[in-house]
Image (tube, rainbow, N blue to C red):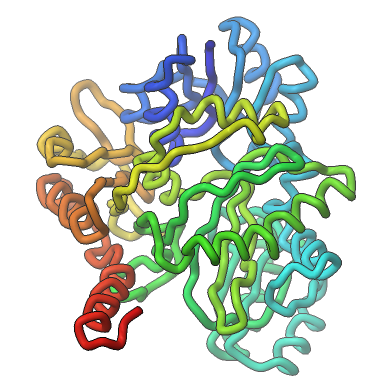
Length: 436
C-alpha cells in the first residue's frame, strides 16, 4: 500500500524507519520529512497545514493510508478532512484531539468522570487567576489552555513566578494558545509516559517509557520538548499498567464516546506517580517525542497493521510483541535551545556513530545540502540504542554521541540516570537481604 506520513521530526523518522520495514509498504512518502527520513521515504515539499493540498497529493499518488505525526494538524482537523475525502487516516479527529488541544477540556473531562488528576481551576482573566494563586500558594502550575509547542507550562516555585506566567500567557506571547489558562496544584512524584493505541472502544497498552524534560544534567534548566528517553521504566510494572488502564485510559475512552467524540489513535498520558497513585498530568494525542524513538526500537511486531486496526475499530485482533531489550535515546540539540539557536551548522561523522552496535540515529531537525547534513532546528538528532539493559543501551548511545563532530550542538550526559540508580539500589537491597 502507498502511505503518507505527515511530519518532519525525530518521532516521524522513527515511524518512517519502522513503516519502511513493513511488507505492507509499497511506497512511503513523508511531508515535509528531513535529511534522515529521506533515507526511508520519498520526502515531498507539501504544506501539511494546507489540507486541500494534502488531499490532492493523496489522490495524485494513490495514497491508501495517511499517518499523522504532530499534534497541530490533528487539532486542526486533518483527519476529518482526509476521511471526508475517502482517504483512510490514523489519528483522532478534531473533536477527539481536544484532549491535547484544550487543557481545560481535559481537566473538565477528568473531573466529571473521576479520573485522578491535579486539582485545578480555569481562567479567562488575569486578576481572577492571580487571586487563585495567592489563595493556594506555591509551588503551583500555570498552563496555557491551547497548543503552545511545549512553551505553555510553567511550574512556579513562588506566587510571583506564577503571576508572571499568568501575565505572559494572557499577554499574547503564545498567540491563540493563551486566550484561557489552567492553574493547578503541583504534584510531587516522578513522571512517566504511558501510551495506548485506541480504536474508540478498545485500548491496547504499549511499552512504557520515561522522558527527560529539563535541558541540562541533573534535571536543571528550562523545560524542553524532551532531551532523552528510555524504555521500559520500572515505574510502570504490569500491576501499575493495569491500574493506569483501569483508572485513567479506559474511563477516558468511555467518556469520549459518551460525548460523541470516540477516540481513535495513540493516546499519550503524561503521568505523575504520586504517593496516592498515578495521576494524569495531561494528554497528548500523538506519539511522544523522543519516547516514540525508543518504542519503535523495541517494537518487534509490524506497526502498520496496528495503526490500521486502530482506525478500523479492530484492535481486539492485535497482539503486539516487544523486544525484551532496553532502549535509550539521547537528544542532541543546537546550543541555545530551547531559547534562541543558530541553524545551518555542519554535522559530521554520523556514519561512524551509527556503526556502534545497536545504534540507530533518528534525525529531528536536519536538512541535506549536497553531501552535507546541516542542523535545521532546536532538537536536531536522536542518538538511540538497544541494549540488554539500560546501562548497555546508555553506554552504546553515548559512545555514538562521542563520535559525532558537531561543536554547535549539546546534549545531556545523564539520560537514564534514575533508572540506573533504581536498578543499583534494587541489586544492593537483594545483596543485603532487604530487597524483594
